[in-house]
Image (cartoon, rainbow, N blue to C red; front, side, top):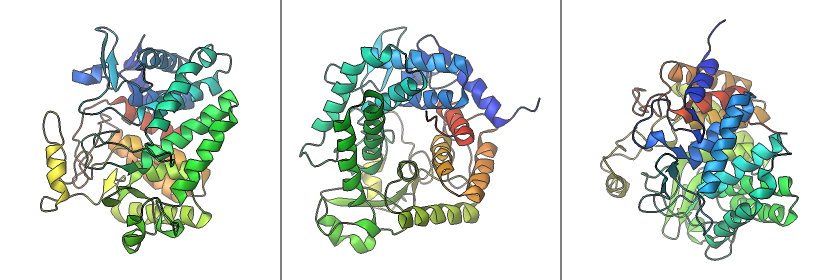
Length: 383
């Protein structure tokens, strides 16, 4: 039988499976030998898409582990080590995306297995997670404020109303509303959707936006994609792959905005002939943003131009994009990008790659890179 990148990706997840859940890498080292909320859920979504029963069992174990370690306040661990009972809720700050990931994972699993006792048993914790995200709005106006280092790109330079985190929350609320038949959650999701559409894209920007800075900066906003985010003093106009992928999956915005984005992605891939960077353009050494970027790391600086978060190529988010665009007529983009993604990951499923040289610059046999291939091939599980 021909061994495809898809089959190899399944093997990576299998080798990283433990009775407590998915590890972050098949080759356990440092913190990669732990169960991570974000990584574990993404691997779980891939498990559901694959239909592999052993991987789905590992996903259930992952959910049990992360919900067991939910903080009493409502947020979730960054990672935990079941063998030592060590739990990390983040470094300098916690992770604002993890409550959404936990709910997305749980509700996706329940949709697959409606008779699971996790549905009733974990409902109070779902309610608490949704409550803490309400609290993170600070002003009751539908957008969470995300601190520096507060999500997956924890060594990048963004903070404030970061689009990806708002979209994850919409996804979580809509899944939870469907699973638990709670229509107040659906109503909240719709309110957040409207706020997103009126503040993160030039073509749908409200005349009375969330913050007047957006109007003052309107001409600088791109017309082909959603911006990364903004805060009271800055607008981040970089392309954010994971946010734009999720915007497509959730069908945010008008048909024209969706078509513009798909055309932009198609032209980029056809011109560059490589998978997409998570954020671009990269921040260069002489740019003022580099001051914050070069100081934001725990162990050693990894965000040189075109590396890591700063223009690096991440298979997991390219897999998310491919899963998202299965809803659209984008066969040429899908075929080209999948071929490029499989070429990148065929040997060692590295965490990320240099945006220029395409050389590996992350941990090998990374499980969410493998999950990216599975999601790219199968799409997201939907009941």
